[in-house]
Length: 92
Image (cartoon, rainbow, N blue to C red; front, side):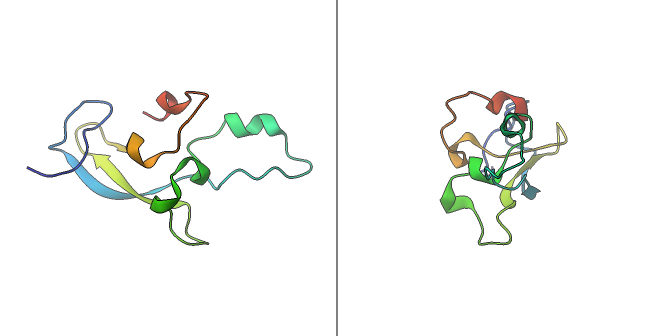
């Protein structure tokens, strides 16, 4: 049996494999960028805990997991920063 986390969709860990996943770049408030866009994107690099990020310019590549049963990649909650907006269920 492997030591990989359970898939958040199907709950199985048997079909979970390591996978390099690409996430959106970290949010930076800049003039001319609508701040509402911050909440209409997928998972961003600044949603990942710093100890799991690679050095620039590779921060968007995260060592995560892929479930062969569901054909979905995922990042376990333990690797994510606390989210007061509870947006995380959108990524499953």
